[in-house]
Length: 114
Length: 109
Image (tube, rainbow over all chains, first blue to last red; front, side):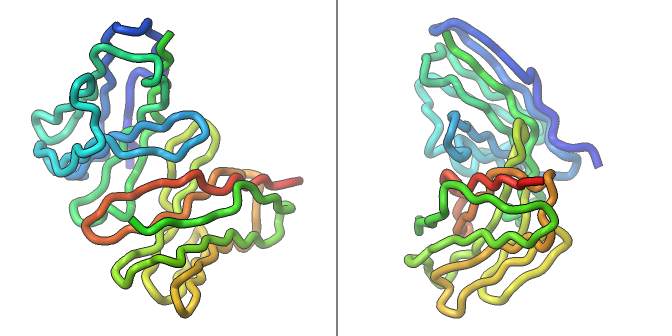
């Protein structure tokens, strides 16, 4: 079974620039999650999709972050404009519907904002 | 969400059992206890979860105290590949996973 794919793996941008991350979940997984992990901390949920609908985006900074999952498969997370404090690893995870306890994580995208 | 308390770090010798503790004194009756681990430079990985009874799977065992205010993740024979950050998480339905800082496990050869 192929795992969760993410790209790019690394990204360096200057503050006020924009950046986008892509995620392809495991086939058949209806639920998709984006997490932000700051160095030394555990991951923090930013947004959860069920198919192509948003279930929870309460911790997404909506003034600069946006995410979409148009066809219920791939997803994109965008930051515009980036701030220094956005430097983190952005993790995508997926799970079967009703099995949120067992999430499969991708390798993450390490973002550095200078 | 109910909070969990874990030691910041632990050490273990290779091929010996490891007991990773977690305190969750404010757990509610509907909270499941989950464990994930994160190997270096990888995303977290599901390990095990339970509600009241002890649980076993191919990776580990989960021992839950009778009052559910604490639990222990047991790795039966630690290997160098088990070196990771281990997260103890409480999750109620339908709430999300909320990760803390976890326990950094070092396995010594």
